[in-house]
Each structure stands twice: as C-alpha cells, then as structure tokens.
Amino acid sequence: MEYVLTATKNEAKAGSYYDKIARLYDLTFKLNGYGRSLDQYLALNPLSLSRGSRILDAGCGTGLLSLALLRAIRFPVNITALDLSATSIVEAKKAVSQSAGRPQDMSFAQGNVLSLPFPDNAFDLVITSGALEYVPLKDGLDELARVIAPEGHLLHLPCRPTPASALLEILFRFKSHSPRAVLQNTERHFRVVHHYRFRPLEIIGWSKSAILAQKT
Image (cartoon, rainbow, N blue to C red; front, side, top):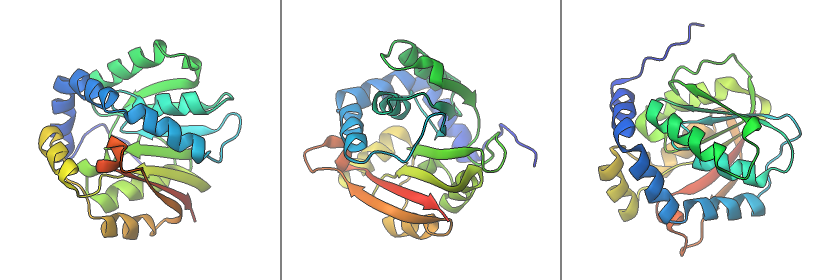
C-alpha cells in the first residue's frame, strides 16, 4: 500500500485552520478541565496495556490525550502522536517536553488519518479524539482498524450532538456524527467493551463520551 500525506478537502481545511489556532485550541481545552477529566477516566478505566505497548494517538492535536496517557501509565510504552497540522505537532512536542511524564516514550509524525503511514497491525492501542469528525466516519474507522493488531483496542472520544458540540462545530469547523452511526461503524471491526458517559458537571461531558472497543 502507498502511504500519502495528502488530505481530503475537509481535512486539508482542518489542517490549515488548526495551524492558525493551535494555541487557542490548547488553551480552551486546558481551561475547561479536559485533562483532569481524562485523568479521572483513565484512573477508573485502566487500559489493557503492558510494558512496551505500541500506541497511536491519531489526530493528536496539541497532545492533551497523549499527555493524559503518560500520566496514567506507570511503565514504558511507545506512543506515536500523529496530526495533519504541523503547528499542532510543534505545540504537542513542547507540552510533552515540559511535562513530568516520560518524553522518551513519545514520537511524532505528520500524517493523514485516512492514509496512515504505518503497516497493518502496527499498534496495540489507537486513541483518537476530535479527528474522525473531519472525515467520512466509515473510512476513518476502517483505516484505524487496519493499523490495530488483532485483539488490540480503540479508545475513541466522539463528539455527540448537543448544544455544546453545536457551538464547538462552529468554532472548530467540524461536524459530529450521530451516536447510531458511530456505534454501527465501530461494530464493523470491533467489539464494544464499554461506552462511558462523563459526569454532567464535567465540561467534557457536555459534548463527548468515550468508547473503548476491541478489534475482533
């Protein structure tokens, strides 16, 4: 298979747009407690990982989800953080270098979630938040499934249609997929382990949920 950096029309717009607003995006999600909610979720729902596990953060943005993983995992792993936006990757690298985690566990790549520059079955876990809303859902999940090893896992934090997500759609120029479509397309490749709803007082819960699924 030939791997390319080229993007769909929507992705190309997203990458260019996030190059311009990466710092605003990072500040927004830091102020709304996104990282704290991720820490609590990962503490309540430990991931099935072992020393040296291969992890991909697909559409890493400024690295908030990767940083939460580094805080939660107490042993060395190999995390690859990928994004279409070069500016977001620069911000993610800076955040990791300034964190108290293990920066040596991290590597970075610029790439397209619809044509990932990795071979089949390359990862034990793929995490993604805020990327599949920019691409056709079936195509995005097909490509994520391709790089996950048999019995590996996908942790997906989809946006669900709410008044809060409607505002975010305008601000960050994406479109939420329906919960039914997310579930149906996930089940084409995976067995859903759990579907977690954040607490009502957590701002992340106003627009997101968390789906953990195992590749069948």
